[in-house]
Amino acid sequence: MAKTTQREIGDWGEEQSSLFLVRNKYEVVARNYNARGGEIDIVAWDRSDAVEPALCFVEVKTRSYGEDSAELSVDKIKAQKIKSAAENYCYLNRIDVDRTRIRFEHVSVYVDKANKKISFKKYILPSFLFKF
Image (cartoon, rainbow, N blue to C red; front, side, top):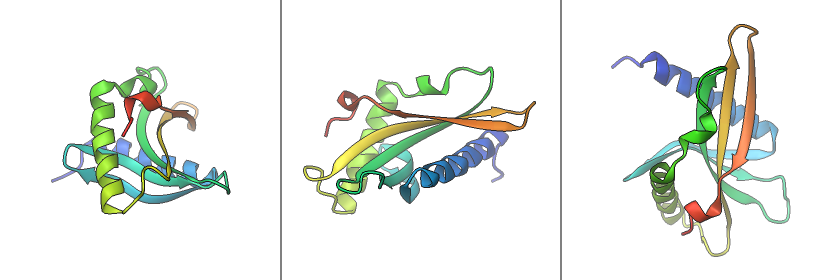
């Protein structure tokens, strides 16, 4: 089955986000992690704090300038699906959620086709949406 243009753009945005995170001292350990009930675009360790790294579950949205805000794409239902997949990831990878810093993040990739530029916005999502 051929990929749709929207899926190709999404895949490209996820690749760009992975590179962006690596440039910012993250170690990407999984991409497009699927579990019953949800999917996570990127799973990565934020190593910028050498004392206490954080395991980050990252949602990625790619938009052209002028489209709706990518940051608004994570609602309560989407957050629940991400949380479910994150719990599954931690369980299968024997991550002790009581002793590991866990963070949920969102990376927006904005594409300016006219000027051939891309920009990124990274947000830490509110923890109350994801409490284990």
